[in-house]
Length: 204
Image (cartoon, rainbow, N blue to C red; front, side, top):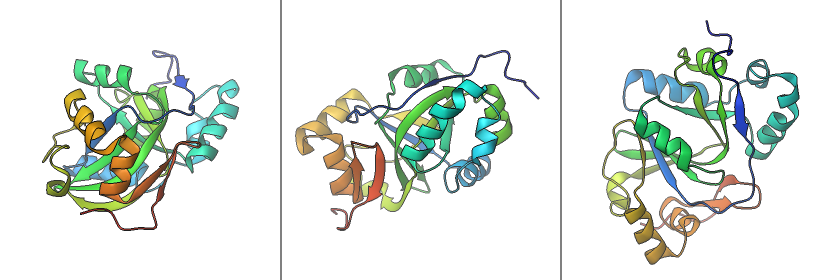
C-alpha cells in the first residue's frame, strides 16, 4: 500500500465561482458502479479522509466537508486527457454522474486533491490520485436524449463537455446554472457551491 510519499498530498480549496465547465463521469461497468456506491451514493467517512492528510490540512478539509455536505468524490486517471481535465476544472464547475443512458447525479466541484493514499483506501488504486471532492450529489433520472444536444448521447469513462457545446448552452440559456436548473431540476447555489434539488420539475 502506498504511504503517499511519492506524491505530496495537495488540494485546491473551494471558493465562490460560477460554473465554467461541465464534467461527466460514466459509471458504466461493474467496477465503476461499485466506486459510485462507495464515494458518490454514500459519503466517504471523515476520519478516513483526514487520516490521509497531514494535520495542518485537517481544518481546511473539514471546512470543505461542511460546505459540501460531506466527503463525496470521484477520481481521474493518469492519461493525458485526464490531466487536461484536471488542469481546466475549478471549484464551482458542474459534475454529472451518468450510466445506462441516463444522468444520475448533479454536483459541483468543491475542491481538488492529489493523494495516492486516499485513492487506494477508497477505490483500491493509488493511480487514481487526482481526486475531485464534490458537493453532496443530487440524484436525478434524466434520459440522455432529453439533453442531447447540447450534451452528448453517451459517454465512455470521463468527459469534459467541449467549449463549443458549452458556448451553445450559454447562448441558449445564459449560464450553466440556468441550463442545469431548466433541464435537470437542480438549483446550483453559487454562494456555497452546494447543489440542492429545485422545487419545480425539470424542463422536458
